[in-house]
Length: 129
Image 1: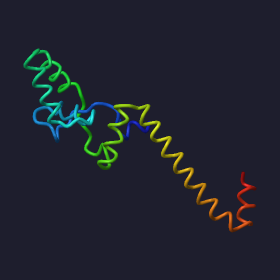
Image 2: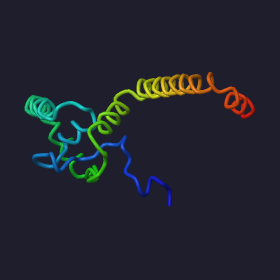
Image 3: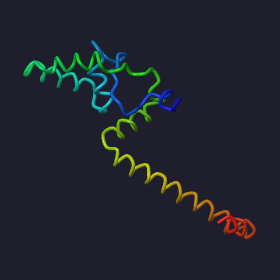
Image 4: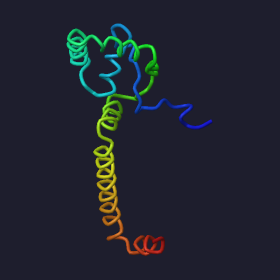
């Protein structure tokens, strides 16, 4: 079995029955995009009553989309991260790279601090490179 069989995909759309009112479609859209569910519902109602066809799309999503897994996110920070990934994968990748560069820089500073006062440790580290 592949890892995706055990873990839900965090980048796909799910109906959110827990936070939903009817079928969980608007709550799912809100979770997927990061937009407040109230604004999604208002936009849906405006579109539905002005055009009519959004009702068909709503029911199609309601019947075809999977229900959101119970433990899709560990916490709010993880939920915000995945919403950012869905909104702009390139921006999220840049932010992650930037975080890793910052961690690398800080580790180099720690290494420099400990190595500068310990020539034996400095020689060992140089042998490893």
